[in-house]
Length: 108
Image 1 (cartoon, rainbow, N blue to C red):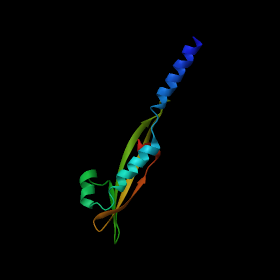
Image 2 (image 1 turned 180 degrees about the vertical axis):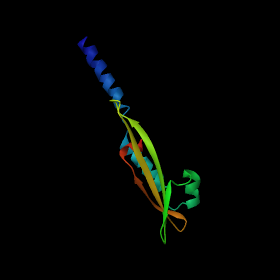
Image 3 (image 1 turned 120 degrees about the vertical axis):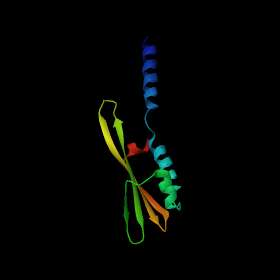
Image 4 (image 1 turned 120 degrees about the horizontal axis):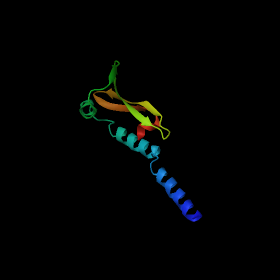
């Protein structure tokens, strides 16, 4: 009986581990996807992501911001809303660089 109980506990705990997000892998996948936009036309970015949440223009560049909010729940029943934001710097009508300003939970 004791052996059965230990096996049951171990299986239960290993099952829980499968639901923990792999933030490092998800972050790497997100960065790879964002890096693929470097050099892409601004028009292709807008066709894919839609109208930006906000934008800002300087003399030689434009920044397009895309923001969304994610609702998260913890195992103890608490809920959180987090802000996930990515910015693309546009120079000469092409994506020059990007910034992803978001907590780990945005990488799920």
